[in-house]
Image: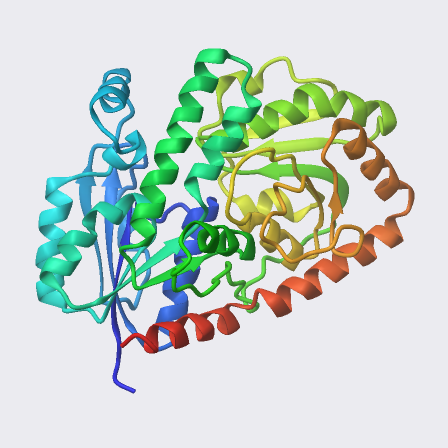
Length: 400
């Protein structure tokens, strides 16, 4: 087999490694490297997610090249209104339209001559035309989630009628944009079975291979003496995370605290809203942005995932399970993970259920430890990076 050349496009520099999406990109790039492929990464250096040149220079040693193109993707009221009135595309796609990126992409396609071009966001689908015009490469879309689902679920959660109306409209536009985008690719890589089933329902002829996040079993963070306390960590510039923590602290925690007053909950994440540092109830601590995510979680036993919207797969859940943590999550949070409640994790979808589950865990820690051990075994077999990459590479090779 000849050495393959793959160009990967991202709508942000995949750094820092405390974000699920960035971790997923890293795992995929490492997977292709281990297959012996030449990897060229072309990333947007966006205004909303700036990364220093020093950090960029240390990323991905051994790949062919990492190149960035500055892109202003700020969200403005004027831009949002103009998009709503004059464009059929969702504002999220418009914000990643860049002449400079398009120009450099065309040049890289001619210089690098890739066999495969993989896009790590559906919002980069507007560049498929450029890829087709300047290359004969197989076009692959990695689907971290189904975007319209996120906004559809958020619209169902909000009470404000104006915001609900806007989010409902945005979800409809997003759905139309996504389905049209899927049809432009030779191969789709959904991250969960649920996502794959939905794609197949909306686009019957889709060519897909399910590619969940792969755990590098040689690099699982070391755990220290663990305390039976709860924690949550996630990027707080992602709306579903913000809504989840708000709901848990405001509505769930009072029930949990009444049932288990000795229990403690710690949460952290970058871009933490100032409001989360104020007037926290007894037993809850906000750590803000932590310098070392592994150090933050290493001495805490129970991962709390109160997500009520969102899509894709929660990479931090897989990492936590692989490290032997005990996961308590909503059904939405566990979406796409082939785990059974009571065997690999505990499900809780209401304040009462969270309170009951946590009380049960604390009253029988040996039984809870068995559930955590089962979860670890599941992840280390089903979500092993090498196995996932072998299936992805086989699907791509079948198109070359």
